[in-house]
Amino acid sequence: MTVNIKRSLWQRLVPVKIRQNIEVIYLSITILVVLGIFLGSVQIRPTVFTSGGTLVTGTSQYIEGTIDFFDQSQPHSVSLTMTDSQYQMMQDEFRAYGEKAWVEADAIIDGTFIPSVGIRLKGNSTLFPLNGRGGFAGINFGIATFENPATLPLVLSFAEFSEGRVYQGHTELAIRSSWSGGTTAHEALALQLIADSGQLSQKYSFVTFQVNDSPSSTRLVIENPDQGYAIGLGRGEGVLYKSRSSNAFIYYGEDPLDYEEDFVQVSAIGVRDLSPLIGLLRWLDTVTQEEFNVELADWVDIPSFAKYIATHRLFTNFDDMSGPGHNFLLWYDIEDEKFTVVSWDLNLALHQIGINQGIVFGFDANGGGTMSEDRRRMFGTNSLKDYFTSSEVFAGGIERARAELYELWFDNERTIEIVNGFAEIVPVTDILSAEEIEADLTQLKEFISKRQVF
Figure 1 (tube, rainbow, N blue to C red):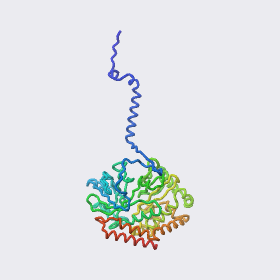
Figure 2 (cartoon, one colour):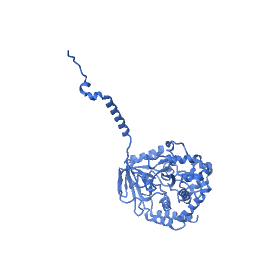
Figure 3 (cartoon, rainbow, N blue to C red):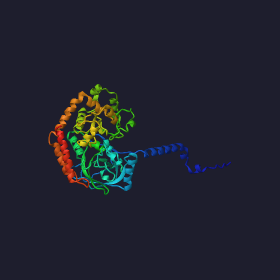
């Protein structure tokens, strides 16, 4: 008897071995799909180690440029070209929401064309005039105006719209705020003096700066803290943290996400985290002055911290790590497990406006604090600095550092020689004449002369 078995389309088309293992095949396909979705959303970056051992994100494009951007013996220029719509978006986002939106532009730096760079506004009090609010205590700090984009304080990013791209080892440059009719030479001088004293500083260049067909301006451009900057410190393996202007410098607990408004981790991202910084804040949260005096050496490089404090007092810069802008960087050395405080944002250093604003906020002309405790809480303080400067144990070290720095900077002609050198490298532009440059540098030398008899 013949039985006629009707085979389904599935049975006729799919081989037996596949039908027998169909569940395993389905599971494999499912796993591959899930992995594809997951890995497709994860960015895999090659990494390399420098000779110092610091982990650096690999780059996909390294732009050599024509000359070293921070070579002081060469003239430098930066020009940007952006569309009207991009520039309008920058203005609208800031005016409506206070946001510093990244917009796209093309750049030419010292003759090298770099397409699709990122540009955004930079600063806090220096941006107040753009909303008609003035600067600190209603004083307009500079000439920043949307009418001339070449006057705006900006961050220039080479990687924002082209990931992995760097220019001479940097992913970002900071185009500093400029003073009305000024050269910003006081900030350049502060950076140079800090470097001369062996402290960590930032490289700088004076440039001719222009956006589209706007009048050109004289601007100071410095290293912006990024991975390239962290490598350039030459401190070996470590992590660089940057304080935000909203930094309260207090312990919130062990969750790193709770510190997003206070700090930015600049280097060793994905390899190191905020644990050392959280540990420092945890210790400061409960420590007594007596415990601080004994245990500080376990957390901080004390000689460099004494230099930092003395530096800002001599510079009459009240807006340091405990000022309204909370301006500072922290370098954590992985080998000795200690922090070094690094100066950042010196636009109020070595300038009469800085002294005037310090007095308004309750600081004396030496950068010391005379502000009442209640008023200091309005601006936020820094417990690390407060404990350190309040201790008799460390007072001698601060005074010795001050004496050494004073002798290096003001007890000879070195500082005047630096300013005289600026006369050769500060460019004349559409909004800054040779006469204005001379007047500004003369004023700076007069300020230095006052510090020499301080």
